[in-house]
Length: 596
Image (cartoon, rainbow, N blue to C red):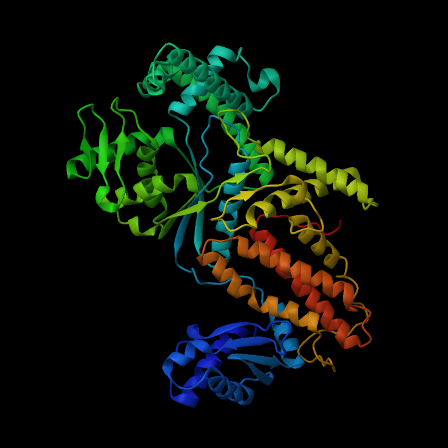
């Protein structure tokens, strides 16, 4: 019973076979909730069947509608509106659906991915700066994607690659030695990622001043970049690191240790964990071996200056550098190695990289190179490319120190939520520890929901004040609705037990129908969100369901309905909405308070 939409699709296919001797797949049948201005619960679209030349849309609709009226239990009537077949379902049908759905433990999951292994890599940060707002979108998308895939039956492993070596890390090391004055997390009480990030900004300022001075002396920008003492020092440090210089390696290990500890604290605050960490420093040599193998196979070629290149022009790409002329590796070097390590460890059917769209070209190159290397897993590679996130004030820049750091952002949101909650005066009966937990829960809901509600492919602007608006298209609005519903859970004393036997004695209310239609569609939305790697579909489902329930709560008597059977049914509907909100927000990693 709960699988109403698949049942309707199959019934419509059966009708075409019975009435026209026409065999069509149920997947060709389009079923959608009936629009509010028309009578009915679900609408079947007739236009796709006109290609079979069996009649006009309305003629086909009459035939299918008549068949369903006679053969599909629960259909009480139908009407046609210009090729759209609107079906009305009985109150008994809806009661039976709700009773079965409430008893079905796996209603909010599917098995479409059963037997398939997926690896999701995110957020893959550099260890030369703190996690910032851009990383937050990555983390929210990556975490939600792993939950979505698991809910659809996939065997999912979450991995994180630390880009912990190379020129960017060398920049922070160099600047810390020049300007850091020996500061450590222990000596200053500051998180290590902030100390390392400050050094990175200081390096950029130093380099900029050196380049400007050299250009003033007559050099071009390109010449000045090459000749700047800071850049030459970085080249030397990077070579020393790869040569295993003890002093360089010790400082690198120390500063990365600060960052790992700081990142782990941020991950914990966000409720995120990983099945496996990879480190560029541990795999880059294997990447070099892969490139050597590619040279022997003719996949790559070497230039006069010693650089190793890949000619990808026949694939619409360019000549891509795989190793620098001095033998040092690039991001793509270690990406080749990590791809191989993942397959050795997980034997995945699909490997998903959650990375911003600024790296679209990089992943086209990576996937093309792996294809040419003839690895067995090349067909299962996918780049979940997402749009950049900015603030209302504009684009953030790490080198200029204008990014919004994740820890600061969450701390500010907690303060804003606290001020808003206290202003509304709705904290009676909660002690300080409960209130602090509530503020953190609402701040996480605000941050995560706002970042995930937009289609991943689209760029977005994160507005902190808008994100905490309890009346807006926000996480706190859904959280508030959940808390409101939770307050009704113990109010059913004295009402009849809800089950299939219940007789409403009146038609389903229009606002109930809207909620039921949404609940019916949940498995379909979950499947679509999982197959399209789009958590925004779940976020917006949760928001729409919460909005519709609030209207239902305001306009319809629930526990105090005149008919006790109706009251029992409405409480059961409320429980199912609560389960749907819980399932949806859990997929997004958003905690739900039982009281607010």
